[in-house]
Image 1 (cartoon, rainbow over the protein chains, first blue to last red):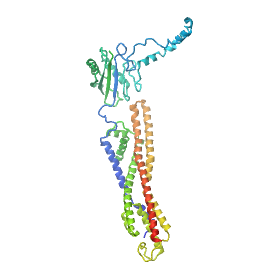
Image 2: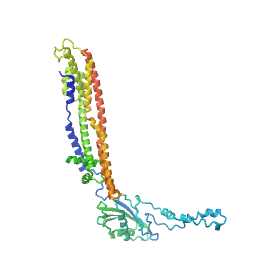
Image 3: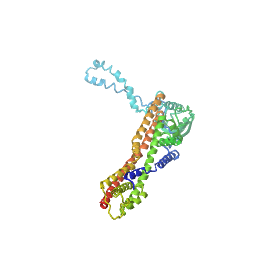
Image 4: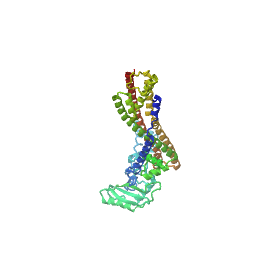
Length: 242
Length: 254
């Protein structure tokens, strides 16, 4: 008969099929790999066939209120010139009320309007209602083309600026009617515009045609090398002010 | 090494941080990561494989143990002699109760042999003329406790590794991510561009490590807790059985 210790030791030595389980585990991992590699899974890349970067651009007429254009800040029509700067006038007023004689009090207010006038551009800017776009990309600036971008990961704002200038050059912005046409097109790597589609017609055939013509005539520079995709799809709104 | 490489790929895919998927892209992505990240991923894959092997093995053996325990208790309660139970024991090797029972049986036999050195030792439960008397019931109790301790430690075997995996792999993954992000930032500095298109892939690559770490840790932790609970249940069953065994021994042999 065996001793207690022998029994315990014999029980401890009894082997369990661990190596087989390692094989199973390995096989399961490999199966998972295979399923992930070759299975119908797409990790956030289901739109592989379509170009990933899509941007919406709003394009208005040539700068300046007469041409029905927009401010450099984008999106809003240039307002009529502010009639009178309101700030400088309230400053003298209380003085005029409190002071019985105007001429005696005139000299002191005069230096005040000078500092007051400095914020004036700021005042007019808020009146246009322009807001910086997302990450602060406005392609306006000197050109004043009024472009809105709804894309946050396009590498090269300069290219958009160029594109807008090129298109604007071919675009007859004043058609006598107010309206806006949403166009969609694709820029190839070589810079040609393809697949021009009217996405949302303005209601006036002339406006849609003018927008389409502007796109068909335009030849763009090559896509920037930093941009990884072969094509770039752009939505662009042509806004006719008058 | 090939299989290891593809496992790494799997973890990358499972990380879900890859902005551009499709198998080819994943392969290039893993090839582009730093050697440190690749090493981290390899370690995490090893942890994952090993912990899943343990999980499978424990699940399998616990299931068998449970089945055998039910059968063994059935046999034990129906039979009137210890020797009958002892004869059944080899057919039910998976249950820890067999170890406890065999230890108690061996102790009882040893005590009988010591009491009657001349007599035949296998007659413990035989209906021999003089009824055998146990010298010390405490000795049997101690033998049972010893066996139960051994069985518990056997049930708990390799579970430490699960606990280690659950605790350590998130940190290993975090290490890989931190190193990856450091390198990504260095690259950003070298490029001089803060563009998201340049910044994002490096960070995404780095985050794969954390995802892989969690992928290894989460099942390990879940199953560790589950197995700990099962071991406790087995331990309670063994204690219960030991008391039952002692009661029977006391009733029959004192």
